[in-house]
Structures are given as C-alpha cells and as structure tokens.
Image (cartoon, rainbow, N blue to C red; front, side):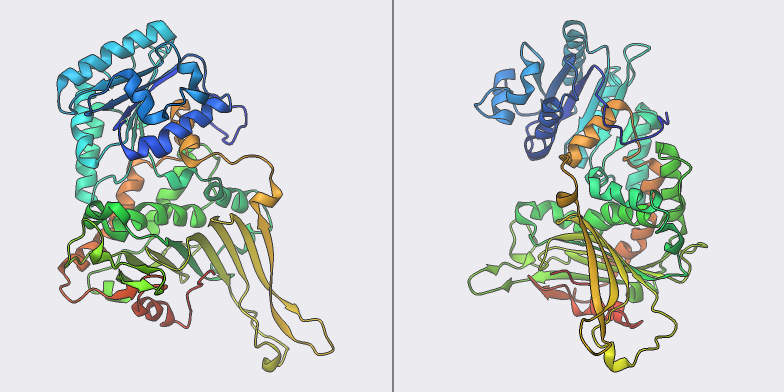
Length: 499
C-alpha cells in the first residue's frame, strides 16, 4: 500500500517481532543488531517488541544474547528483558525449525503483545533463501496471523546471479508472499545522502530546469573502495564487481539521479519512475560490449611500507581467477530528457580513495569573449553530489582571479552535511528496518526493478564470461586499468578522480 509522504520525524514501529535468519552471522552482529539498538535508543520501538534469531548454530537464548551483545547485557535493548530476545536453532531445510518458530511467535504475540506482526529478515547466503521461504510457507508464517497483522519478508542482496536466476527466485518468493509483503534491501538507498538526491532535484526550482540534455554534457558515477576483498574472496569469485556493485548500488543511484519527477514521494509513484528510467537505458549488443564496457583486476601495489596483495593472492581466490574487481561502463538513456548524454559509471576495489559520488558536468558556454591564455585553469562547470565520505554537494564554476589582469579559473562552493545539520543521521540499516516494520516500501526494490537491472548488465557479464583474452589489470592503489581512460577519452572526456 502507498502510504504517502516520507521523511516524517515522528515515525515509530508498530508492535511486532523481528525474526533474523542467519542470526549468528557477521551482518547480524555488525549491522542489524546495532541498527535495532539505535532504534530503541531513539524511542522508535514500542515496548511490545521482540527479536528472534534463527540459525544452525546450537545456542541458548542467553548464549545468543552474549554472542550479539557481548557481556554488557541488553544495553539499549533493555526493553527486551523478560523473554523478548529469543533464539531458535535448526536447519533451514528442516520443517521442525519452522514449527518451533511458529510456536515461539504465538507465545510472544500473547506474552508481549506483538499482535501477530512478524518481519522475517533473510540475512543468509543466497542458497538459503529458497528453503527458508518454503519453510515459512509450510508453517503458515507467510500469512498474517490476524486480520490487522502483517507478515513481511526482507531479502538481502544478491537477488539472483543473472536475470534467469532472479526470475526463478521471484517465482519462489511469490509462491509464498505477495509482492507488497516483499522488501528487497539495498542498504545504499537507506543513506541520507542518497535520499538527498531526491531533495536536491525536486525541492529546489533552481536545479530542475538545467537537469537535462540541453545543459548537461555528461554524468559520472563513481563507487570506489580502498579495501580489497579481504576474507570474502570465495564469495567475490562468484560475484565480481558487476554483480556486487553495478547491478544494484550503481544502477539504483543512477535511477534516482536521472528519473523523471514522480507524482509524489509515495512508494509506487517513485518506483514507477525508477523503472521507466531503467527501461530507457540502451542495451549493449555483444558486438558493442568492447566499446562500452571495461573490466580489470587489481594486482600487487602500494608502497614498500604498505604493500598490498593482488586479487589472486587473496584468501579463497583462484590463482588463475578471471573475476573482475573493477568495472567501467558508458550507458546511454534513450528518452526525451537524456538522449545524447553519455553516462559513465565505474566501481572498483583497491582504488586510491573511498568515495561514492555523482558528478554532472555542464556544457561549456557557446562563446567565451576572453582570450584563451586567460582561461588555462578553467574547467567546465559541474555539480558534484558526494554520497560518502564527506557527505555534501559541491558546485564548480569559473571566477575571476583577484589582480590587475582578467584571469578566470575554477572555484567551488561546498555544502557539508556535518557542518550544516546538527541532527544525527541514522545508519542505513536503521532506516530500512524501521521502514520495513512500517510497511513503507519507498526505499526498497520492486520486482520489475530487479529485472531491469539484470537486463542491463547480463549481456556484459555473458560477453566477459565468453572472452578468453587476458583480463586487464591495474596496480592496487591506482585508479584502474588504462582501458578505462581510453573508454572515456574516446569523446574527449576524462575521469574525475577525487583526492
């Protein structure tokens, strides 16, 4: 159901039980439990709230509490005292696990007043999604226990490994849950700075008239990481940069930055416009891939004092791996607003800076009545949306240099979130867990969005899988393979490399 305007400051979760599958895992300990604790600390959770962990690891309720909270007790989650923090041990493919869970949820509904409202969070490897969904359906937990209650499913990425597997997963999900019950999570959409793309575009009349092909020369989206794959090597071998980052994070940010104005900030209105934008992205043919897509893999690099291993030296990685740790694309959007404007997107590991940003470069003036030797330090005007770190916005423009001569060079105006707002920004998972408990799907991904994203990247992934030529490489702590510079340089442009 479309619940109307978002970003209200007084929202609190209804009585409910949050069930986390994969409760003994790293994501639960590092992100989900701290997010729930922060919601409690800020008064967003009612006293009629319970949290249940489900995993294969045998543990008692007390052992589970110590595993996820340490030896300091409940802390901010003291409202869970007296039986509000529980644990179920069992196999995900074992019907007894779900019978035990159903009995426990009934008990919590009666003892803690959670009113039959159940949110099931799948924080597990993707191969566990199908048995968990079947198990929930087999125990009748896929349907609300009361007329006023709800049963909802939150699914972590990756949502499939290609279009066909995503469709198969959707068929499994929809065999048990209706689409309004399903919340596909991309934590990037929970970031305030990603949501600020909407505020910048649609709450300011000065930007809307120049947000199109008449004024914008090109757009770059960068998602750069300084870290390597670490202990995730075995997972990354099956994913790569295209599946891990481009198919979800990058395309979601691109859709928000380029979509048409929605009729409202309600979930369906906003997601409709995102889907329309994704549908307008031109699909590369197999023959085009070499001209519009570049991949790379990091090798050993850095300094003598800080020498970083190459990807093939990482734990769990095939010594002959052809998995890409870097991907750069040129995308074209075939619609009235953006026809002819190139969109360059890139992501990579072991790059020199950790940064996520959207940079719109504007057309140069048609005529400059200033001698060229007085413009040697003048770049094209640009608007840079910094999503992380140093969250904020920069506007780059030309200004006269003080002095007797008339020299013009680039200057900038900067807006910083930290310096402007005193309010504490919630963590992405905190915002998204609360939204899911409220039934607000605005910042979650609809099934047709998933299909459109896979439709865009699938031809490139397939082409690379069939290409037996050596994978291009780049040194760790560099800005990627030289092929990426040639990709953007074909039309006289260069990458914006943040310091």
